[in-house]
Figure 1 (cartoon, rainbow, N blue to C red):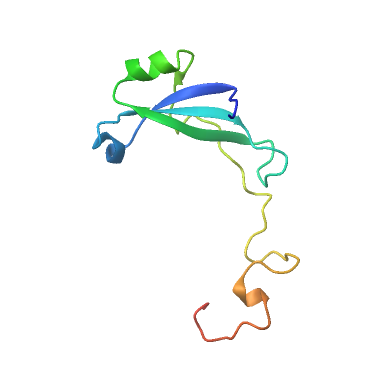
Figure 2 (figure 1 turned 120 degrees about the vertical axis):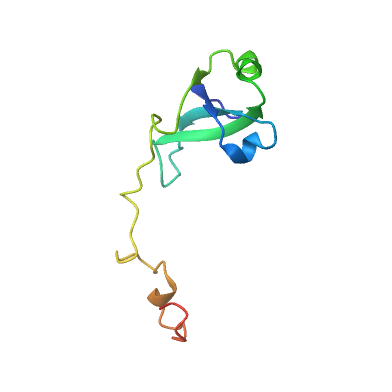
Length: 104
């Protein structure tokens, strides 16, 4: 089982609320060294609850949070479509892919 440094509770969007689940609990940690996002904040969904009291009962240390105030993952270090990548990342990087116009 994964260990998290802390937990947060977020108000869920209308899709989940339509199922009676209004609050989501998330565990926070860091991405492992083998990940392309190594060392960056990692947010993992744990469970949904109908009431904030139920969420706080199961996760008493969890704090209310919002996607607008949480740490964000940075992907600027990943190659873009026009960046050279050994072996290629996109179909047009390979010379044996027929040019039938589907990638235009």
